[in-house]
Image (cartoon, rainbow, N blue to C red):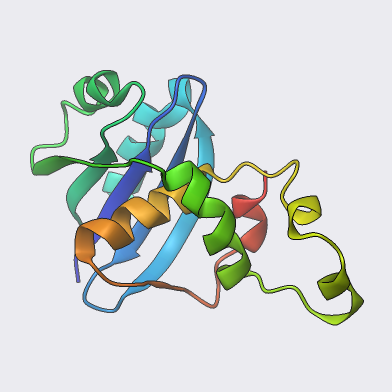
Length: 145
């Protein structure tokens, strides 16, 4: 089944998610330096059957779209308003707090976290109008760089 790539673009770093829409499953989630994104996507395309790329319409989206000129299928620009803010709440849905940590303020757990990959997930979920789950083999540390 073909997969989609969703990108939360940024000046220095981008969140990226690879997902299967029909299965509502995320297979890869990572945060990449913006200057490495083009090569990273090229490598994904050689290994995966990607049907489309969805890019958030915020910071540097036009530049990112131009860098991905080699992708001959559909590239969609989609609204990403408030995704970084919403990523904080989505983080706790994906990685619930348990035990005595539940008594601590939630903000403590995300102070130093880059949430760009979760923002990319939210862009995908908004575009598809459904929630996605994480593949069991996904390395959650890629979300926490």
